[in-house]
Length: 294
Image (cartoon, rainbow, N blue to C red; front, side):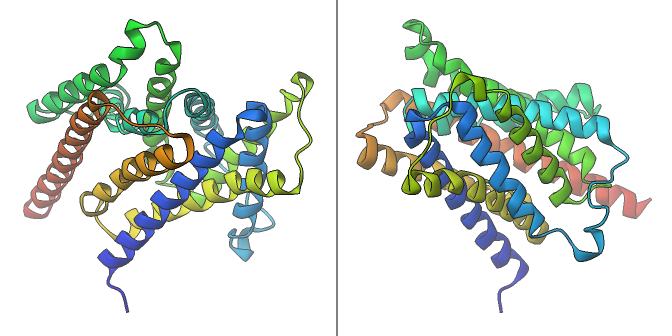
């Protein structure tokens, strides 16, 4: 029988694997319009979440008192998703994954204005280190006016607000409902792109494209389960296995070799996010201990 921390590690590992496979398929799907790929991500995500809705909620699973916040979460999530899909198709896999690690840096900044959180010196220094890491990674793209380096940063901005919105929604909404509405929003957005021309996939491509939605769905669920069973500070380092997977598959599938600048910048971003996570856990423990003593 696995302990809670071991379960947390297992769920995080499976989540990283699922997200990595989804990224690989998205990068492979360059022959298909992005809108069509979004459809597969959303529609098969809906099917997955329908399978895990509790039976006693099947008749009214869609009810919510926080429709406005769901809308903002879906809007920011859609911006992030479209941006990361464009980035995956246009940049080396390891570069996109490296920059995407910077999302907690922007979350820290947003939390000051949206959640009225106080950020101390250590976290501000971590934010500075993270931004230096982003500049190191994107410098070749910016210097040669490669606009595609902007998209992973847009993804980080969108994902940062998503993290805050989910933090607010999860106080009253089940995880599956939050994810269901997002998958529904993806599907509805994809329909608007039909006039741009969709391509009829063969059976093999249909199965691969459907895996984008399925792996995206289970990855989000496993990520939530990981945080449920174990402390964030314990399982978060496993997230960075995604960079190892990105380097491995990027090399063997697309012959992509990450530059020294990319790896150095990724190291700075990872160090930055680890400091942020550790300080958040430290602050929460201090608040909890003060509450108990009072």
